[in-house]
Length: 237
Ligand SMILES: Nc1ncnc2c1ncn2[C@@H]1O[C@H](COP(=O)(O)OP(=O)(O)OP(=O)(O)O)[C@@H](O)[C@H]1O
Image 1 (tube, rainbow, N blue to C red):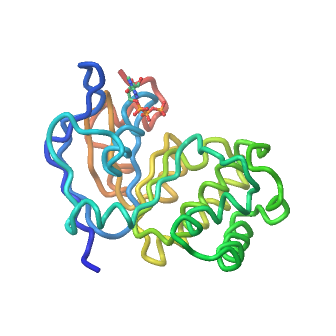
Image 2 (cartoon, rainbow, N blue to C red):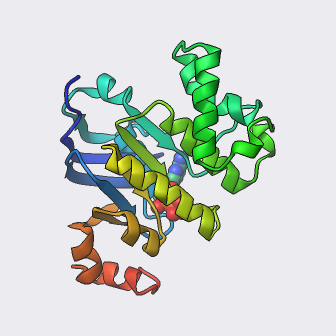
């Protein structure tokens, strides 16, 4: 299988009804580590992740994986901020990506139970997924994305609805995935989470990329006044 990276983003822009939401963005992402997309509410984090993943249509520019779009697409997972639950059990939800790939029930359910355990849902596997809490749904979504062992995993605010302990559990799983070579690209407005997870930072404001920096440099000495304000917890205009 050929390499996916670098991922090259050239003048990429997404607009809706004539209004530019994100872009133009120029960017190149290498093949390892964890990239964290930061920025205030509405700055375009979700839209940028969807552009990179290929689910937000570009109105200008291009986004190219080294191996080509279709091959890259098969090796990506995406965890949404508000994950969609099938009206089935937790176990069936987690097993679903394997089932649609033609994997038999016994193996799919065995792996789903294992992944359910890893995200702390062992006691809820038979429960209807639609009855889960917000945090439990996020854990389910993570297990459902990781069960296919994607090479690249996009996560949109992966612990927005989680308490401190659940956040730590999710972050541990993400660190393990990173160690195992999964490329992580996630958004968060939680500065603590970004510090714990990021190798490099993309700082977005009003749909534009203000900084692309190694994480340590970003937190020690942000280059733009807007990033400094954001890190200080001030309102960023
Ligand atoms: N389908 C859409 N149609 C019109 N405007 C949209 C659409 N999706 C997003 N937007 C707008 O695009 C901008 C960027 O939204 P996006 O959700 O990408 O930001 P975000 O940084 O992820 O925000 P948050 O932190 O609140 O989740 C916002 O102003 C939003 O209102």
